[in-house]
Amino acid sequence: RQALHAVRLGFQHPKTHKQMRFESPPPADYQALLAALEGY
Image (cartoon, rainbow, N blue to C red; front, side):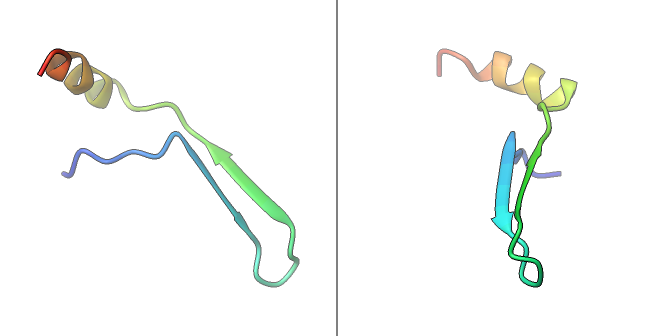
């Protein structure tokens, strides 16, 4: 899979015009990848 993740995502709902916001921490394998790439 691609190494992509959005911690925060937000948009305006097209019908209700309500502001929608979602948050999700990075998965453990993604965090491990970021740690391994530090310093490059």
